Length: 254
Image 1: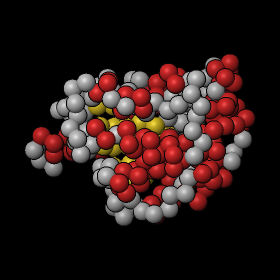
Image 2 (image 1 turned 90 degrees about the vertical axis):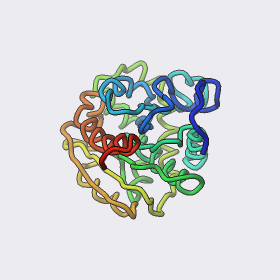
Image 3 (image 1 turned 45 degrees about the horizontal axis):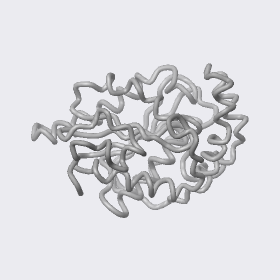
Image 4 (image 1 turned 180 degrees about the vertical axis):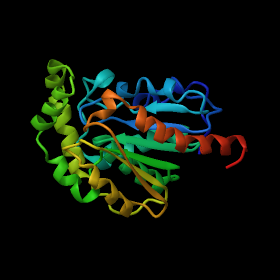
């Protein structure tokens, strides 16, 4: 593993991840993957919310959206996970926690498997409103129109949503292509939303089969896109996981 260099912006890592908060002294790094058709900006306020806990929030920058809008989105999970795992190389000098919402959770699991296979497993994976393996292919085949309708109900801009349709459709194909069934060696926390009609909160327990380590579930208020309306409940869950990582990094009590 390589140490974090002072000028990460010159590395290939900056193409795949927002690195403005990364410091060599980080006790942890929270790597965040967006929902289908979404971008890393959904995590813009998370650094402030987790300030003082001794680490950095690192949103993923996927092709086909935001600053990489002109690039085609990748529609094969093995290719996407490989590129994302490779780009994390300079960030592996401290524990990584992977977080993903919906499609982003499928990406987080795939990246965790790739890191475990080729480097080192993450410290923890947190999945939010993510269809479990047995339902991933079915969820991936869900029509883009159904998800666009869900986002309109959440108040997202209709014109922007329509422009994102090709990326959303590619993300759905990507989710459907995921074949990860072997277990991870790291803990998993699966979070569901009480009123989610796309990924029912009752599905969260199915993720227990994906880890050999500890497994926990939680249910928060809201629907499938609760993250857009109010991320505070899931941030509280994440903060509780990050505090002991920072303490261990400082050599404090565990």
